[in-house]
Image (cartoon, rainbow, N blue to C red; front, side, top):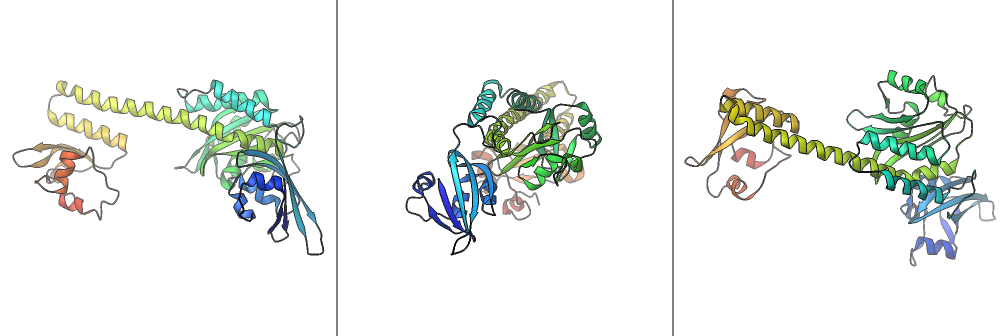
Length: 373
């Protein structure tokens, strides 16, 4: 497939193969429009800055692309030549699609939802080591609260682990290979120590010479990084970047599935602990002890600042606080009652809705009606 553009980035020609791949049905192609069909789009866009070579996914097709600048009477023309990635010879700069599919198949065979995130990431590294040349590798997962990458799995020299341990087992944004990828949200390819961005510049006491690292993405969400290291210079090229990107979604999905399973298991245990606490109430000395334990436990699970239990009094048609509350003193909590008169919104919630939630407590009129302001 061939695309021709002016030096200003205006596409002036697309051959029949390119039109078939793009499926624009009469719409004139432009670089921005095509970029929306490409993953990762940066690989495609960067090629138009000058002569280059890269791989990317165009719709459902992985392609290898190269651009050339050609002078003409009308000005500079940039020609992009794309070819379908069916197979590649070992050691070439073209991604081996067959190798990518073998890695994806390996992941599908061994990954299981009931594994922990650490187990899953370790298995991902073992699969990559079996299929790709590497002396070491790591998978880091993004901690959005702390804004840093946590190293979850590692294969390789323990000296590097000691270096990471001195940093708290994590990479802040911009630190190390993983931190650089997290900051820029794009792949990093290091050929050797003479690169402007080298492993020695990235981190002291690094025994490796070349590396390749890509962000783990699901849609627009950043989940972490996968990085391969080699003790030799020039081990990795653009084909390794494209290959890791092509399997990155599968790796991310496997890790996310295991994380969701772990979270679900934890939630089940949390719910069971509350139920167990309620059942133990019969053995507790008084109701205050029960409500205190329940409020404290629920506050911990929900990360709430104030938690309390109300019971319904049918004669008065109100919800009455059961002391003690978590987070406020008894002399304040005892003043809070929630009226449930017929025809009120809170009565409708009480009788017909499983729960009520608001994210605007300062403005929600129901807060005032319930006497919670």
